[in-house]
Amino acid sequence: MSVSTAPETDRDQSTHELSSPDIPWELIIWNDPVNLMSYVSYVFQSYFGYSEAKAAELMMQVHTEGKSAVAHGAKEKMEAHAVAMHGFGLWATVQKGGGRG
Amino acid sequence: MAKAFNPGRRGITGFLEPAERDLLRKLFDDIITILEPSRPAHEDPLAALIGLDMDVAVPTDPALLRLLPDAVMGDADASLEFRQLTERSLRESKIGALRAATLDLDKDKLVLDAEAAGLWSRALNDVRLVLAQRLEIRDEGDAERVHQVQDWGEADDVESYLSLVYNFVSWLQESLVQAMLAGLKSSR
Image (cartoon, rainbow over all chains, first blue to last red; front, top):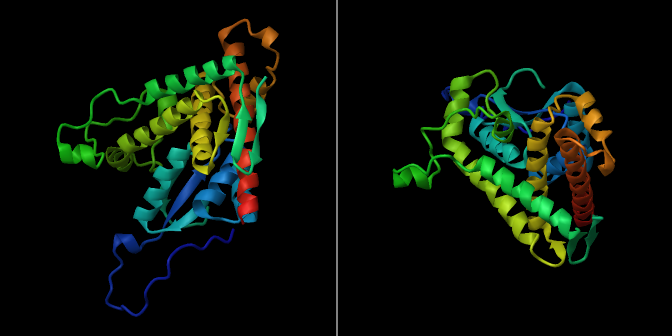
């Protein structure tokens, strides 16, 4: 998976401590047998602005692997995405980034 | 019989029989009832204004939990804190979509602009999530079992009736989303 929406860290600030907002978080979308594949694809295109091909790829990953990390970035941003996804009825959780989902 | 939603220049048009409108009205109303908070907004006006709700708890009804899921996997405390900050406004936005769709049902012609179509797709999706909990759809096999029920002549118990309703709402949402995807494609 090549998802790289995590912001570039500022390397000039060498004294800058790694505080929690700088740790990349990720937004996980979980598979469920109810949400239509077309609807999930629509949400990925319309909300995240992903291309039809990328939305389809992420949607298929959710469907076949059970989950997919569909966005990466600051914790607050991922939390805002999670609320939006719950608004759409998708099952989303946030977690500290590590292995790519 | 309802007709599939169709993308057009003035918006997405749909056609529903009076009985189908009544059914959807009832379903939207049921989900609104499930979503309405049991307690009024917080007495502290500032807390109410920003939607903060310190008394919130994890829903015990699995259907409501599916509408308002935990946001932090494996961390109940963080999930509860997230709920306190976001759950009330999430309930309100879902109720808003369901109410908007209900109002559209009163119009003679169902013509949805992009915003209305978005609200409709959310409303139909929330109906399906709740029906799926009642029908115990937990995996693809369960979904297939429900999908097999297609004959209204078979609707002789609650489960088969709910299955038929679920399949109708699924068909309606699929046709709406296809029309919305066609709209996205033509706007690129």
